[in-house]
Length: 334
Image 1 (cartoon, helix red, strand yellow):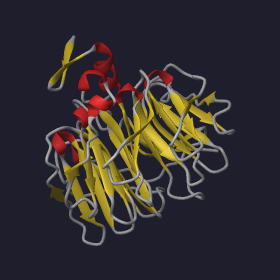
Image 2 (cartoon, rainbow, N blue to C red):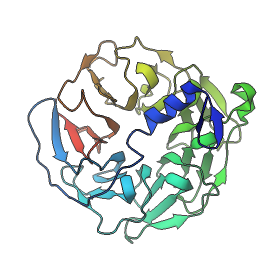
Image 3 (cartoon, rainbow, N blue to C red):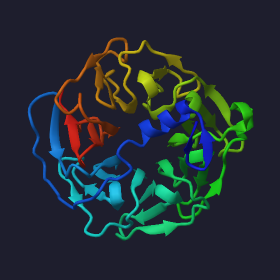
């Protein structure tokens, strides 16, 4: 037994949390900015920082993009991710672990319950009162201003005003987890019609169609879920601990387990309408051209020795981008 936060936790729980939080601790920020320098090969470098920098999340609305990371690092792009500029002043010294945006607003979340919001036309980040000190891992925002943020020890928050105010909509965890343990929740997603999806420890995937008043269990297993992506056609993927890959064909209502292609902890996933799927993680990266029926490893010196986390794409004509170690932003070359 060991301590993972405020509670005594089992070794598997600690292992899952360590996998998700790789490089969060002890990362330092240098402020170096790099323009696009795309390389040949399966992965092309767009931006890199120093060895101690890390980027944990990336999101787009149209051609506008934001990436966030260690020591309050915020990078912005206005050309679908081809070039990135670091904001001159970090809005915080805490690590930012999740970000999302729509056409008018952005929300970033991170350590110590931090939630930052920004009106894209006004420029400054503003701290919102989250009501928690728990680390927040992920945030989702739709075009109507409905948002969901999730984090450690079962934290689930909802906003209806693009992150200005928040209230807890956490499930009654004893209904879903033995002994009422408060699971770490790593993934937050909200659709345009307001369906909330959260994923985390114990393979939990829960959905709510009524703003978090009632949660329906869609999946439960042993391995933690660290990332989720559902396409507009309803096909989607969830990935996580020990090579876990799940697939849905009904917008996340039900899930099936795909045959494992790796034992690595998987941290990010993205899929396009033509069946192209990219999965990132610790010391491994996977790609499929047939909606997950077969997989191949993307092997480079860095994909086999380091990590990439979040994945996003501005639109169907833009490249799939990933963020991760050393403050890197890279593209998948097809």
